[in-house]
Image 1 (cartoon, helix red, strand yellow):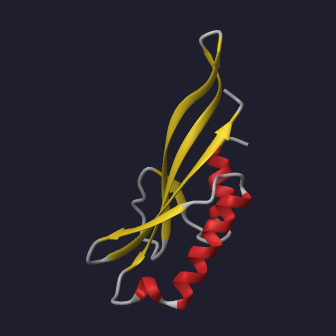
Image 2 (cartoon, one colour; image 1 turned 45 degrees about the vertical axis):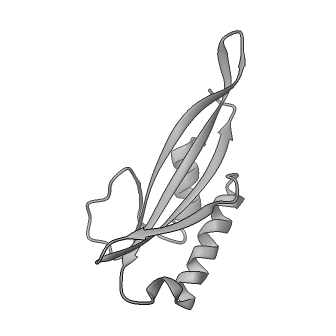
Length: 115
């Protein structure tokens, strides 16, 4: 399973809309992810593995206090554990967003030996 399939399989049971880079649809809640590929574990000038630094953005409508609600806290916990269960490191989480969207950003790493 490649990194894209891995992320989608982990996230979509919790947030059904999950896409790479940009989402332009009309879902009220969605995830967008990006990642950086870093070659590691070199031998004979060739990498033996790739480390992915994954950033998963969970976006949902913003209103005062929404990120502190019990529902958001529960889903945040589910997403963290889903990424961990998929083989990524336990994610760090930061908040972002604007006046219309709340956004929680999960950052984790994954190492894949299939170069």
